[in-house]
Length: 388
Image 1 (cartoon, rainbow, N blue to C red):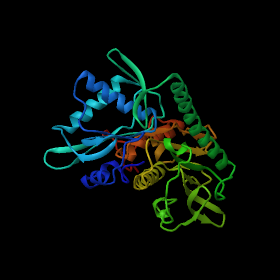
Image 2 (image 1 turned 60 degrees about the vertical axis):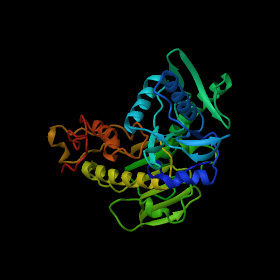
Image 3 (image 1 turned 90 degrees about the horizontal axis):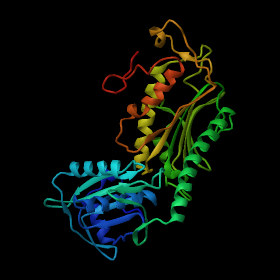
Image 4 (image 1 turned 120 degrees about the vertical axis):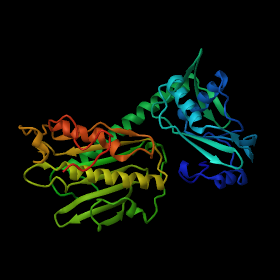
C-alpha cells in the first residue's frame, strides 16, 4: 500500500499523523523504525541492508521516528537529528562504497513533528540494476523484503532478480525501437505530416510492471500539451491513455501521447519542415527544455514514479545541417549522415534536477552528428541560454 498520496517533499506532520490514525501497517514497501541507525559498523550495515532490500524487491519507504507494535504504528516518536544533511551524506557515501552496483534514485526527507524531533523518511525506488549486494567489512549478502521484513535472498531469488533486471532493460529498448519504427512508417496514433521528426520519450522504470496504471483523469490534457509555443490543440482518449495533438488538413504536425502506465511519447513533425534541411538549434532546444520541464512537473503532480529514461530521437534526418548562423564557427558545412539518430537514453532519478542540464548530453549528441564538438548554448555554469 502507498502510505503517502503526495510527492516526498510535500509530506508534512499531518500526513504522518494519518499513518497513525489509519493504522497503516508495515508491508513489503513500508518499514517503521523508532530510532535512526547508529553511526557504528553495525548501524551502517543495518542501513545498507534495509535500503538494498527495498531496491531489490518493490521499492518503498523507510520511516524513522515511528513506534510500532507487530508492524502497526502506534505513536509518532520522532528522532533527534542535529544535522539532516550530514545523515543524508553519510547514507549516500555508504551506498557508494558498501553496495554493488550503486543504488540510484534514493531520496531523503525530514518532517518536523514538534520540539526538536523529526520523522526521517527515505524513499527507495525499485532498482533497474538489481540485485544489489551489501559488501561492507567482511559482510557480503543479498537482501530482499517480504511481509515479515528483510530476509536474505536465496539462489532462486537471485536468479529471478538478475533475469528481471535484464528483461526490464530489454523491454525499454524494444519499446523505444518499436515506437520509432511505427513513427517512421506513419503507423501512429494520428497520421503525421511527412518529413523529418523530433521524438521525445519519457520511460519510467515502473511502467513495465504488470498491471501498472496511473489514474490520469479526464482533465489531464492541459498537463501534456503537444507544443509549448502554441495555445490551441485537440485532445482525445485512446485505448492506451490520452493524446493531445496539433492537426492540419495535411495531417498532424505534433502530438503528445501519455500512456496509462506512465510512458510519454511526443512527436514533432513541424520544427524540421523545409526544403533546405536545416536545424535551427536555439528554437528546438528551447522548445525541448520548456516541454520537458512542463512534462516532468506533470509527472510529479500525477505521482508518476522515477527513475525514468529520457530518450531523444531524430527520424528521417539524413542530410540535415545546423542552421546558417550556427555554422559560422566553421567553413565546412557538415551534414548528418544517418537516417535516424537514436541518442543514448539519459537516466533521471530526481525531480529536482534542472531540465537544461538533463538534456545537455542529448543536445551535444545532435551537434556531434553535425560535426561540432558540443552544443554552444551552455555556459561555464552548465546552464543553457538562448545563443542567437
